[in-house]
Amino acid sequence: MNLFISRKLSQDSLFHSFVNEGIEIYDESLIDFTAIPFTKPKTDWIFFYSKKGIDYYFENLDFDPSQSYAVLGSATASYFNIKTNHSADFIGNNNAEQIAEKLKKTIDGDSITFIKAINSIESVENHLQESYKSQALAIYNNCIKNVEAIKSMRIPSCDIVVLTSPMNARAWFDYKSYANEKVIAIGKTTAFEIKSIINKDVPYCKHPSESALFQLVKDNL
Image (cartoon, rainbow, N blue to C red; front, side, top):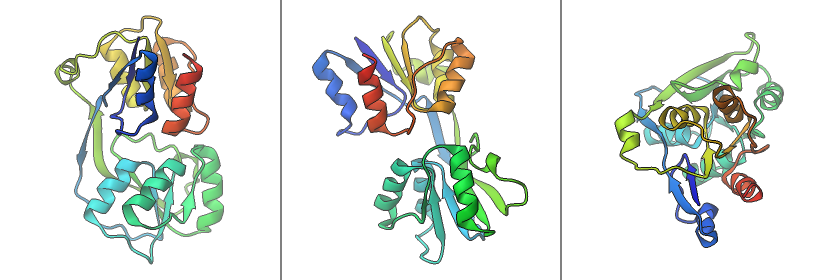
């Protein structure tokens, strides 16, 4: 049995334990990322959607103790702590609408800048009214790898396909036609994107994290 997941796994990832069950793992991101030059924004709050955003931001700027920092969810919060040796001032629950409501009360009229990729779906700020002093700052580009780069990965037909973003979902189904394999999404937005492509509901994590994704895959074997 073959399993594809659209991200490179760390050496200690739980997904590697599937090898003990006779499952071959193919872990490859189908997305290319490149940094974009930027200057430090004048803002009260900095909001990070992802680990990538944290990486690119702190490659250029030091942690500022006078700045307030917010993150999308617990996995991003853990990475923020590892990267800066500090805790985020606000941690969301991965649900964009709920995060926006909680964020409104937390920032209480302060300005906020959302750190994102060029092709971000901007899930949280789309739930903020125009009256809020928010802005977006794209600090990296994300785009689907070219066809030849994906072909060079030599990914075989897979019985289980685990997709970790809407863009990875589009890339996968551009590369391979749906053949009734088991498809699993990391979250609701990715699941909606998959349904728009294959016209089928797929299971997804209610609180996206790699451990939750692992358990969901295990439950669906």
